[in-house]
Structure formats: C-alpha cells, structure tokens
Image 1 (cartoon, rainbow, N blue to C red):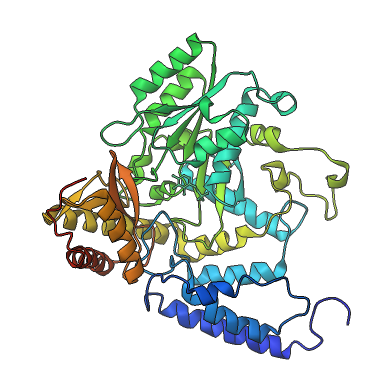
Image 2 (cartoon, rainbow, N blue to C red):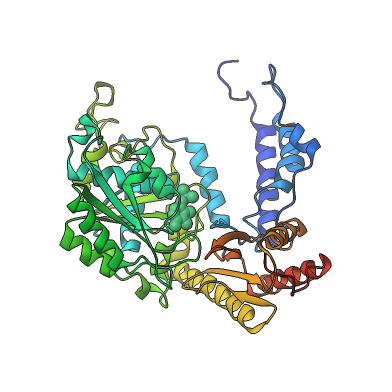
Length: 477
Ligand SMILES: *Cc1c(COP(=O)(O)O)cnc(C)c1O
C-alpha cells in the first residue's frame, strides 16, 4: 500500500460520522457537567508512553479521546468559564476547522483561494479597529505574536537598516502602561531591545495610562540621548479591562512623531458594541492594532491578528527575496504579496477560514450584541457585588472584567477559595492583583455565560467560604 491513506474509507467515514454526532451532542449541552475537573493520574499516565512502533486503529484512538481527553479539557466552552481572557468557540467554528484541516492549505503565500479569504478577513479586521482598508495584516497564533510584530515593524519603520545592523546601541525606547500585558515586555525582549527599553507608565484611578507622566518620560528620555519610537496603548487591559485614552495618546504620538500601537487583544471587539464603541475613540488613528479573534471574536483557537496602517512599512520589516520563494507573474507562485512578507512565519495554516466563517455567519451586528451582553452580564456581577456587604468591588468595571473579593478575607484564603470554586465545577474564575490585593477576577468573554451563571458563582463562593470557616470577618493578612 502506497502512502498513508486507507484502501477502504468506509470504516473511517463511519467513525467520522460518529465523531461529528458526538461533537454536536456535546455542543448542544455545553453547560452540562462541571466546567473543569482535574485529570486523574491514571489518565495522565496514558500520555507518558514511548513513541509507538506500530499503529493503533482510529476507532480505538477515538475511544481513548472520549475517555481521557474530552472530560478533562480546558473548560472554556462551558458557560461557567470566566477565568483569564478566553473565548468559548462556536458550532460553526468547529465545522470551519474541520474543512480547513481537510484542505491542509499552506498559507505562507502563493496563488490559491485561502489567501483571498485571509485578505478578506484582514480587511474586516481593519474595519473592526477603524483602520483603512488599504492596511496590511496577518493572522497569527495570538496577540502575543501580533504585539511582537508591531514592535518589530515600528522599530524598522524608524530605520530599515536595523534589519542588517540590529538595534543594539540605537537607544530605542518605547512606552506602555504599567498594567500592559506581559507579552509587551516579552516583545521588547525578543526584539533585542531589552525589557529595560520599555518604559512603564503609571496609571490613574481608572487604571488608564497617565499622559502627563508619559510626556515627562519622553522628554527626559530625549534629554538623555535615547530615541523614543513607539507608544503602546491598551484597549481592554488584562487585569480589569481598562481602555487608555487613545485619542489623547494619538495626539501625543502625532506631536512627538512616535508610532502608536494599540493592544486590543480582546477589547478591540468592544468597537462592535453600540454602547461601548465610544470608549475606543482614537483607535482609528493607530499605526497598528493587535486583536484576537479567539477571545471576544469566539473563533476557535488559535486566531490572533495584527493590522498595520502602512502596508509598505509592514512589508519593509519582514519581506525577504529568496531564490526558493521566487514570486511569479502567473502560476501557483503568483499573487504577491504573500503573508510570509508580513510576519516571521513561512508555513502557516488556514486560520482565515474559521474567522471568515464565524464573522460571515453571525455578522457584525450580532457579534456586537454578544459583546454588549457580555458587558451587561459583567455589570450584573458588579451590581450584585456592590449590593452585598459580604463582597467588595476592587476595580471599576469599564467593559467585561470584574475584580472583587469577599470582605475581610485574606489573600491566602481568597486564592484557596478560587481553587475550591474551580474544583467544584460550578465556575472557573481566576485571580489578579489590584492595588496589591488579591482579587477574584471574572472576565466575561464567554458568550454562554448568563446571569444565572453569575448567581451560581456567588452562591458557590459564599457557601465555600462558610464551609472553610473563613466567615466574613477573618482579619485581612
Ligand atoms: C490575551 C492578551 C494578550 C495576549 O494574547 P494571546 O492571544 O494570549 O497571545 C495580550 N494583551 C492583552 C490585553 C490580552 O488580553
């Protein structure tokens, strides 16, 4: 038998039908069972074996998946999942992934339909963030890579010779709020600028970057011989969902001739919500914006995106001319520019199909209503917390993230409570620190989370705290 295909597809086809039925049975009841449960040691042990020499039938492997993988998955498809910032996926996204896998396209470039689909998606992404339709962009794993691409593009926009000489000794410095996501300092690290070249700007009482301090820092850096090159605004901070004053930052960047990048990983989708879009005024003036379709866009993992206003500057940072990647005027090697001209990846999958299918299926109005409803559910949680003297709200709620605590409970006990709630299977919030205090953090990025889920979360917290004997008057440590 040549190759790896079966001689007879009938049993694999039957397995495929069974799998699809099981997948949609589960999708119809995403709220059944616990949000998450720890994987028992005997199931973990199944994944500690040596590389098998001989093969196993697909039916047997699927049985193993049902037993050892599906019940112990991440949990973010369940309505009770509200930890970190994670999207919940959609049924249509599942189908798109299936089709994309069957085509197995390599979307680094060349002349085929997947490239046109990705270009469409990039134009839609530009529309979502308010950049012109002539903007360039590329789908990547997530905003970590999108923000990294922005840092590289902004530094090469300053001087394309950095591609040959490196940035060492150029004294480039950039600025972001102290609450910026950890991938921003990581991007400076990976770009060879060093995390020290990212100046941390303090935030105000609403957790927004302080422009007065930013202006002073830029002046001080210039006076000391540094070369400021970019400011990173945050639209939806990871700790509490704050949105920087992007219009004011854009004014400052225009005055100071600095690249304005906006990290809109989840927040950029807030522009689709009629009641929240005004918060994002100024995003449309950015030079580049990072956003994640896999978070509030509900596209299955992974699907991040970078959009760059000036396509020529974007390509100038990444495009190469290589003999084995020659672009032609026709044939399969045509259709330049290729997506490998806009980022570090050459081989890349057909992420665009699931994004295109999700946005096309729901449309921007329904996606905006979904974002709005997530914020309303977060608002309901904040209201319940404010109205109940056993709880306290630790940060203002600008969008969809609520940071709160049980009053009079130590950080150590708060950490235990969150783990208890996760293990109870009722809900999966996470934690963060707000003003030094450990907060229970509920990020409503999940289109399946409802007010009933919030009620269950609060009831579980109260019940577990009482059971632990923590009461509500334990001294704060
Ligand atoms: C999630 C997040 C990131 C990182 O994005 P990934 O898709 O996880 O790589 C960056 N910034 C913010 C504000 C985020 O919420």
